[in-house]
Image (cartoon, rainbow, N blue to C red; front, side, top):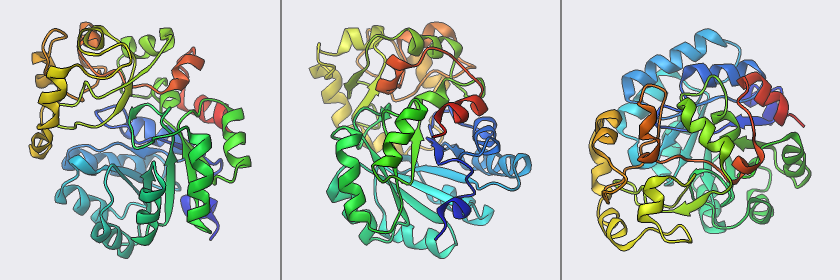
Length: 326
């Protein structure tokens, strides 16, 4: 299989399908137009359908990819993807054998994001066409448990002839060359693309990343999704996290039993974040998008990878692809 042809890539660079309004049609289409792989974040089904159509209209000769954030993916999302005949689906934070089969039968190339050898072996056994090997230095929610450079060779050994993309710690062309030199078929970058004019991130959020001198791995923003994530510190983390980033007892206990809340459709992120406060132990995974008030930066999850410490500017998506091209 010629992977570049299958994924319609000019450069082996994919943009992470960041949800919560960070990646819409504008960013995904701009990345694809520049020769990379733009990936839509999960949206409510009707919005997702519109976003897919918009990407197709703007870049008709490129692949359309959708990130299926499994804790929040529902049947209507799958139907939209199948009916729209998307090219690539990225399955993240759960591995569903029946869904992999259904997507594959629909002609969709299925990649699964994994962070352990066990997850990689399971995804491959279930029929994944490729893997995204995530290191723990990645931003946002984490399946990665070790550094990307340590995990990538293990994922490659398991994958055999199936492609593996490296995720976590990707900020420059040198990072891409290192991953390709280790055997990766390509790289996936998140924070680099969050810092683009086309992303849905609030300007204050972007500036917090540029100004950051550290990131923390925590579970603090875990209401409805009690999983590990990497963020820029803010007032909420200073109030509810220990020095090592781990959540204090009260939010940790609340979040532990909150997973069923992920089943609630159309959670109304803006309304929920309006009720959230740094001094209250109810911290959702919602991030700060451009239409929200700037002062919410201290109550929202400001996701960013460790590459935040090496990034110092907002660029166009096309420039970000160029900066990452080997």
